[in-house]
Length: 166
Image 1 (cartoon, rainbow, N blue to C red):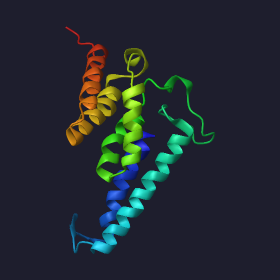
Image 2: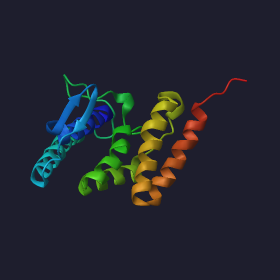
Image 3: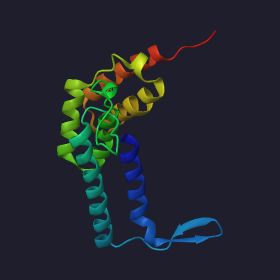
């Protein structure tokens, strides 16, 4: 689900400016910027796409990380202790001004975020990209100490996951 949110964000950014680009000799340059009205319309569209994806995630997979698309079910081993979709979405929601969704995610991090199974359930890559990245980005954007504390815990899990060969 995190990759869906990230893909939506990327596609959304492309949609903001797609109508105003001209390709010249393998170089894409803007011809004009969208008007304020057009920009607001595109931003609203992007926000709605993000909310639609998030509402489906919340309905079918809150606390999990994978939704099986044919059944709208999740895998039991993903429950709760990972939450990478929730953590990864924090900076996006903050930047998009989606306060309600941001606050719901923050409460989940405060009450449920737990990487105690990190060393045997998923790898350092997931912890670094989703947990450290999401939490540190959110801390940088908000200054909220909760995110710094949780990123520190995530960093300790990463240290356990990485094995150096001598």
